[in-house]
Image 1 (tube, rainbow, N blue to C red):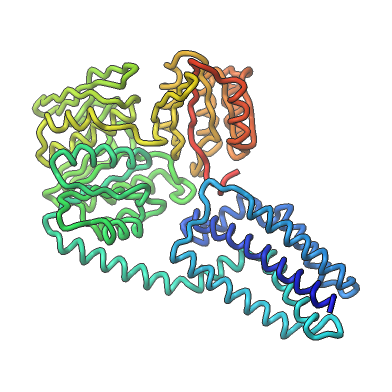
Image 2 (cartoon, one colour; image 1 turned 120 degrees about the horizontal axis):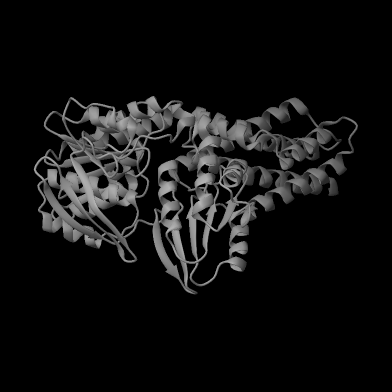
Length: 534
């Protein structure tokens, strides 16, 4: 009886440990867009399959399998390890915790089935390890759960594969429903926005400007995948909407084309073509081809507005529709330019000039930074294309608020100024953020984990970022290990050897800031990596 209770408790502890681990694995799969190939890349880069807890679990598992092992002691060891590991995982805090969506619930159901099948197979093959049949079955069940913990990544990917046909059928039904809704609104104007960076900010600016005259819907948050757009159309698009501003994200060739085939944009904006997501795109030429899938989808009577400040946009002709090029720096050949740019403590002012007829719109905004001026310029070009009057554009631009985590500036109690550029840092935006920091009074403090998804240029671009940061900040706090070596090398190459700190987490960075930042100082938060990066 005592043995049966012991084995039952060990089995429950092993199942608890397995459940907490599978939830964490599902969280990482979710952060990798439910794509097994991306999930495998994360496993390879993170070393999660050979972590200390995983190796300890394997040791306990093999001890339980060893014929000469004392079974009662093995069960105590398995139970204690599983309980301890489960509690650690349950108490761990994540930046992006698992979202319990219908898809996650289906995956959890599939995992339960797979675990049950493994357990039944183990019971059928293993027999009993003691004289009592129930105790033996509990022993085998506990060992099976511990084995599933050791191979939880395989279980998660297997569940994803098993459910793939079902998920595809569900997605196709949702896609067809969204297409039907869009077809029922022939008067709807769709403006697509894509780019390596700047698309979310431009989306917000354009939506705010167009709302002065049109009932306008935009894709919320980062709903920039095909399924995100489908969900927006099915849940938010109403018959009274006149304009749909659709953000289009991509990590591989064909992603933008797929969204365009659904929403059929009549106008578009390409904000940037740069070295973002090179791990999946491989080459900058593939990035260019994918972003210009938007331009290729615009009908002959439509318009695409493209950022001529990027070489891989400036050298790409558009022949299937009207094309207007905008620029802050590379104004040669541009159709829209920003002139008389002036930055003040209250924001910025500039003149948006249409070159062909010298039409000028003087604008004042709460925003700062050349990237924001560029994004506003693109939005103004589309607004004029849709027939908006200058005074409505001017009024809207004056009211635009800073987009959270995208070079937004705020002052907090105690006199500290925070520059929040924590969303998805990139080579161009990070340089602009450093330029803003360089112009601030007081002690200038940089807190950053660096940039990600830059492929073979990961080290090079983060080192360059560190080199530029050396002259822009007084204190540099490098967070985590992912880009630490590159950024520290860049800071050193830029001549900065004092005021440089390397910490393991943002919590450690906050503790450090509490002792060095004071009234009148400025802190720039440049990027905030998800849980898939260390």
